[in-house]
Length: 338
Ligand code: PMV
Image 1 (cartoon, rainbow, N blue to C red):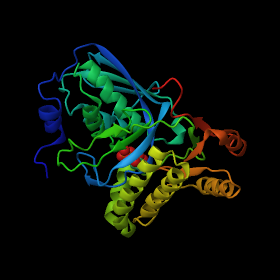
Image 2: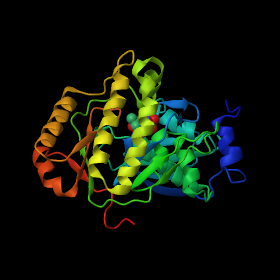
Image 3: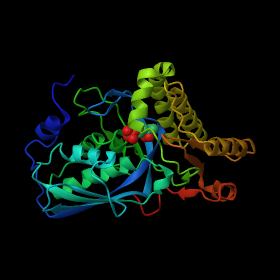
Image 4: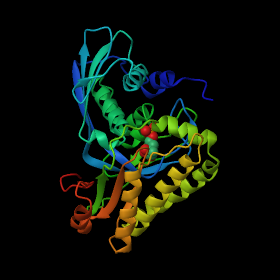
């Protein structure tokens, strides 16, 4: 137990001495979405979104969230998602308001315009890029001049995986040990891999019935298989970090795929069982494994949703597009990014 609430920690420690009010009328920011290669699944503390283990992700370059903030003379915040005003009673709006209330006085209202450049139907973790972009925009609106490490902790309070969306490229979120999470922050790994590709394979746009937040909690509480997960997650993370440093694609892909399948196994052993896969997801998995048997080196990973993310190298792009014509191919290290 920390003895303090997240809001007290944010105001007294993270933002100590800084202005808790907007100093300009508007601000905007962008943050990329990210896909975990070794997953964050399970919290050691839910209020601060503190993970049981670390995780490593790859950011999706220009696939992410643009957020624009505007101070408004209204009694309530107004939240827009992809141009559409969101109802005050939706989970999305309630969570955004709760996050803003960590520091913003109730007398201040904002219009929050959040636009995703990732296909919404893909069920990608848009909350990750969403909270990272929101943290960056608030940093500008209130003139905090916080470093990215501090913004990573602030974004984490909205959604755990958002701690990794402040950077492009490979990012590691270290679990940390402190009760208030000041050391549970992410940082960029010093590696580039221009040939690496991530493919988004949208097999079903069925709305997920169980959020990752709820699914994680249910798995930790009820899944017998979850007991072995933290040890595996730690081991996989070390292997993946090394594979990134060595540009060992086989090591990276195999470990990422096995890590994702193991995470899903822990969910499926929860009660009530948690199966994010749709029949189309399983069919696509078999297609990936079939291609691998034919010598095409491609691996899959999945999050709390039915869609697949494929990992492959540039040389196999044409082959993969032949087999998966709707595949959205992302280049995490475009030539114009440093
Ligand atoms: O950040 P959350 O609470 O949406 O959780 C994300 C969980 C996974 O996407 C399944 C794994 C991960 O590390 O991103």
